[in-house]
Every structure is written in structure tokens, then in C-alpha cells.
Image (cartoon, rainbow, N blue to C red; front, top):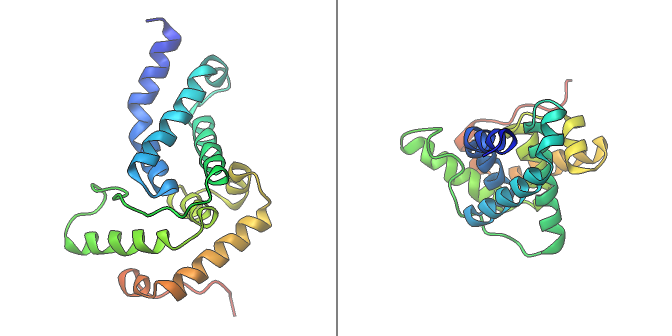
Length: 173
């Protein structure tokens, strides 16, 4: 095994769990998430030398992950059923399980683009500009998709307010 292949293997071992959680949130299905991650890593492996020459490879891999997810949504316009648990180790206890179930059901009610915007903004903690770059859209689209998605969640899943508390005001009086 040469140094390039060893570096890629080490990166995959170290970061595949985190990337897999993001893929699961983007797809809503464990098997689709595994396929998405595999496709993103395969595309990255083909350009690994150039990727590591540019510095930290994770932003590149995440960009490929999001791009592959958007490409998948464009190819299939079928509504996905959210099936897996996003991160079973993140929270413990029945209250945490209830929250995850409520959140998963709510995310399943969103369009794929709305789900991607919420995942990037609130799970990945990406800025509006970073989210726009990753999804190849304008910042105003990110803002409007975030607003529409949160509004849709408030209407379609009022149980989120009960599970996570009252909504934070978005406007300053």
C-alpha cells in the first residue's frame, strides 16, 4: 500500500462515521445513506492526491457528499420514507428516543432541499453562505428554504414544540 492509499484509508477510518451521519440526515434512509457515502468516497478517492494537496480533505468530501445527494434527488423525485436513527449514541433515555422519533418524522415531511438546508444549517452548523455554496444556490434561496422549512415544521409537526420547547423568535421587535 502506497502513502496516498494509506492516507485515504486513514481518512475514511477516522471520518466515515461522521460523514455517514450526515448522509443519513440528507437521505432519510440508512441504505441510501450508505450508498451516498460510498459514492462520495469513491469520487474522492479518484482525486485524492489533488484533494490532500489543497489542505484539509473533509470540506471537499462533504461538498461531494452534498452534490451527490442533490444529484440523487434530481434523478428520483420519489418521496423517501425516513427510516433510520440519526445518531443512536448522541442521547440516552426514553426522552431522547422520543425526541429523535419526533424529529425524524418531522424531517420526513420536508422536501429533500428543505431537509438539506436544515441539516447543513443546524446539524452541520454551516453558515448561510457555506450552505449556498454546498447546495449550488443563492444565499437568499437558503434563507427562504430555511424559513419555509421551519414554518412547515411548525404547522405539520407541532409536537416538535412540545419535544424541544417553544420556538425562538426570528425577528427583533
